[in-house]
Length: 298
Image (tube, rainbow, N blue to C red; front, side, top):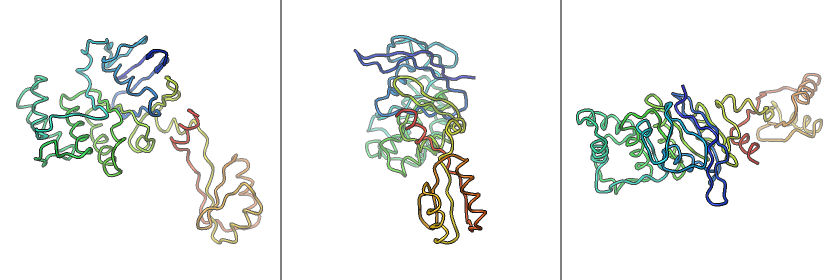
């Protein structure tokens, strides 16, 4: 089942076309990476999904219901974390979740249990300080808890790790992985390593359209291998191969990198066998999402 479906979405700001016929589908129970450069239109698309932005054309469906500008009925299915979440700084994390639950009409008993459950999930279960003293990472974690409060079917996160240090990024990604048990996650980013780490599916946004979409394995399979690493037992053996094949590049610890056709690589291996050159390791260099993204959007 598709939790989110976008068909031919268009949006311009004056003469600038931001979305130019965007087509996108997000399957249920996935962690979906929405990848694009800064300014590519990711936030614009998200605002349209939330019914907060009037578009110039196209349709958006959340859980099979059509999204209509200014009529946010479909948002009952959605939890949303903006790139810079704002809070009432004089509250504690628990007070803030209780406040959000009360204004959304949650049952008090359910709210108490749910708030404690989510604070434990995001690592704030023992936190008693006021939000004004929270770090950026702590605020992101609280924002995820608030977005999950009403058990949404779709959690949307806009650049959730972009301003965090490596430790903070890891914490947020671990939380999103854990939250997958509860909801479908759709998050925008330009950090390709984050997508490779936790996403099951992804899409590349380029020039207002989806340039490529699929599972992580499918996306990697769309591009041939980036080559091979050959590690010899002795340094002099590496030197022999470099003299014989000018397209081999020297690396560290008797390693050689090869970027070229498999037919050419087999020729190198034939030479190795015929000359009985001891080889310690041969490793295929798998294509990365970063290399694929740069190739698609160059």
